[in-house]
Image (tube, rainbow, N blue to C red; front, side):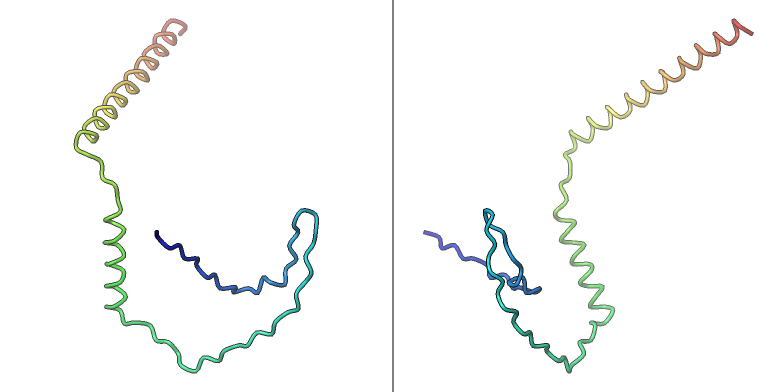
Length: 108
């Protein structure tokens, strides 16, 4: 059988001191732990421009591979539907324009 391992989540904000309400009961507040601050003596340097550009390009490539491209048949269907929609809308608005021009010429 496959073994399931649990991830250990690091408590960055020391949430152990927060009271949790469970079914109307409150748990006791635990004493605060003193945190020790680490002193950083070495300043981390940024990688040079070419390394950052190479990392950027590899990230773009990996995201580009995740894109789902449509098939040729779907693109043809969508293009035909778009063209018919444009023709229908243009004819509709042209007929409304002609109708309003006819009404205006009758009452003018």
